[in-house]
Image 1 (tube, rainbow, N blue to C red):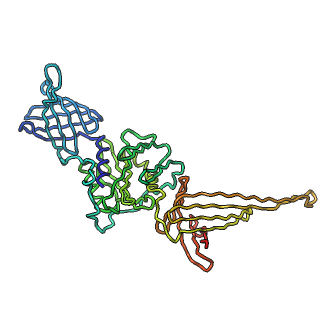
Image 2 (image 1 turned 90 degrees about the vertical axis):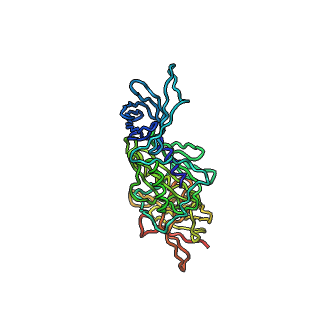
Image 3 (image 1 turned 30 degrees about the horizontal axis):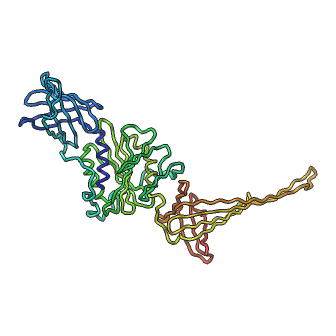
Length: 425
């Protein structure tokens, strides 16, 4: 799972907060420095053996540049913040006003109350951690999802990767492909909102909700962004037919209450994640559609039930319209299905004159039909159909073998009136 945290750290670097008190050494003398950040503006003071230095500068990502005023003379600095470790390069100016960076002195400071770990770097394949090696038998803090999928991305777009992975996303969102990840951008996204999709070898992990996975994510994230803390329990959110776990962190970043939401699943031995990062209120309002996108991960790659494989027929009659409808569905072992139906309506009508005598009569007959297809999978006693137009339907079902044949009964909102399908042959 280290690939996931590496990207979370990279994105959070864009909103690094330099505010705080730092301590370090300058030629054997203890230095205490206090910085305050307001947006991109940086200000502060430093105390070196009783000598006061005034600091001004600007911040970009996790770097800062500016000057230190020492009794009217100025030193230029470049700073980099990694977790709680601040590295400064100090340089003088020559008589021509040129900053002598080639002669710069490098100083290191540690933020009080923080840690000084090195930043996490995107790992090489051999460096990836393997949570599966330390998995416990516990079920962790998994709880039901607070927000259910909306049910359809029918009007959205389907993304298909060369590896075979698929998912759907809203048609008005922009998708950008990079070497190691995909970025989704809503039309009204703010500059500090990020929605990333990435995948990598799961290194043997099979359950994204394993407590060891959660603990590892916590330790890596908080060591780099100490203000971010996990909130709530791990939630369950389906990713197609695969297990899914949702982790949430919140904290103050640059004076803004920020939230990280990581939707993690493992499909065919690969870890796949949808990561949302940004102001807490922005992320919260998008959670319903994020869960729906996550639900379509591996879209069409579900687990079948051999009992359902085969041809099924359904007959119905509407007395009001005089319509008889015959439907046929074929569920294949490869997870695809096709369905077709034809309907025939007929009726008679007549007219009478003012004396009540029948003076004319007529009849009608019509036939029509149609078909559709898609993919199907089963989770427990639920049958889910992913239609080729992007819509999705889920039914509770039972299968029984009776003297009249094998029956598949699908239950919708009305549990007392199932749709009955009889297996052919």
